[in-house]
Amino acid sequence: MDALTAARPPLVGRRAAAVVGGSGHNGRVSTTSLPASESAARLREALTAAAFTADGLLERLGAPAYAALARSETVPALRATRGDSPLDTLVRLFLLQRSVPAAAAAAALPLEECVADGWVVHEGDLVRATVDVRPYGGPEGQDWFIVSDLGCAVGGAGGIGSHEEGVVLGVGGASTTLAGITVRKPVTSALDLGTGSGIQALHAASHAGRVTATDVNPRALEFTRLTLALSGAAPADLREGSLFDPVGAETFDLIVSNPPFVISPGARLTYRDGGMGGDDLCRTLVQQAGEHLAEGGYAQFLANWQHVEGEEWQDRVRSWVPAGCDAWIVQREVQDVTQYAELWLRDSGDHRTDPDLYAERYEAWLDEFEARSTRAVGFGWITLRKSAAAAVNPSIVAEEWPHAVEQPLGSAVEAHFARQDYLREHDDAALLSAHFTLAEEVVQEQVGLPGAEDPEHVVLRQHRGMRRATKVDAVGAGFAGVCDGSLPAGRILDAIAQLMAEDPVLLRDRTPQAIRLLVEEGFLEPVR
Image (cartoon, rainbow, N blue to C red; front, side, top):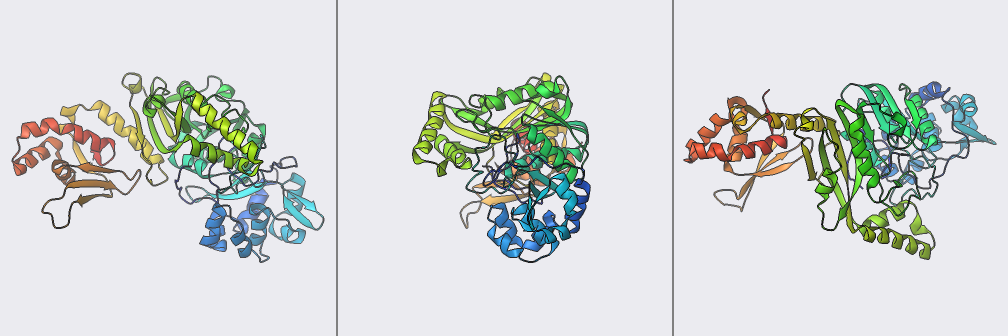
């Protein structure tokens, strides 16, 4: 799906669906009861002492083997861990799900406590893990661990390949994307809706006074409990239920959700299929979020939406935005209905079943899309912000941006809404009286034929955040180039008019819209 990156990436698969969270290669549900958390602190000490961390693994395995694990290829990691060090043992035990000698396990972790609490089990002279434990690097260098079902953090091109409805997946590309775009300011309360293995709740625990985590799958809540305990985070308030049912009328400063957004014929797989027709689950989630946001609060989601014949996708998703909220909707990827069906048929391993059954299921996907006049499916991010100003004059931006961005983007998301506030409060006359500075790491590129006296056009390009590029005329380029905060915009335009022999009144009349666009996209920053 979305080809995004996150700072200090964990060992992850291709995507994660938050109701159960992650991706895997065989989707085995743990056959034993879930571990208890009593030994989590001592197990954590053993893991960190052995450098079983994101940074420790990168150093031990080397970049090629480390990257191969993220692609679900285990052979390089097996070759790199043929020794008998505690780190080698832990990699084989928890990451590669190989049985290890009991003596080696005892040298790497508090074995009998881990057996008693159910993290591992004896098999004669060998020991095997009952759950997947995956190192995950926090945004400030924290050593965290994500706990999920066996095999469900090793995804790859083959997909999870599981038809187990209750499987709990580990952290994957989509869940790290959501974690990266989330606004990380201190808040009183946060809600992780559809917590899965708990990655969003884990992030929220680092900056929220109180974290509530919900899921329709009770096993997912238990895995979230284990993830938080093993990572040394504060416990969350865990509640079972669908959508906002578990929280009643409560409001939160932050709501995050990587829901089961896959648009499918039916709801075979809880971890990915929404169980509602078309994109109704994502629509319902977004529409109901407004009632549960405190003033100034953010709600941030990953979502899929239908591209329907005769309807612009922007209009469709804009209609989901609840009253009293500003919104920023970013479409990151579009797939036609055949690509989309094939992606999720591979994800569940249907391509490895009987060819006739595969064809039958493929037909069912296409029938579903045809019945709904759907020609493609979009994937992207939706951010809401509750605002008193939005109740009167909402800012709803819906755009397509499939290009590379710089994660984490939380601060860029917060800055986007701050710029919307500024523009909403300043008419054209106020813009001309305002002072601006050029944002950091913006460069100018001139495009034209070699040897030409003047460029065909000028491009301003960002090297941070969304990494946008925008074409500007000579006035726009000159204006941006001298914006250092010392002069008001109108005075700068008057000087440009004199240099270009233009009428300063006409230039002042036609330029505010261009200034507004440069501010909205983050090229110019108002001097407050």
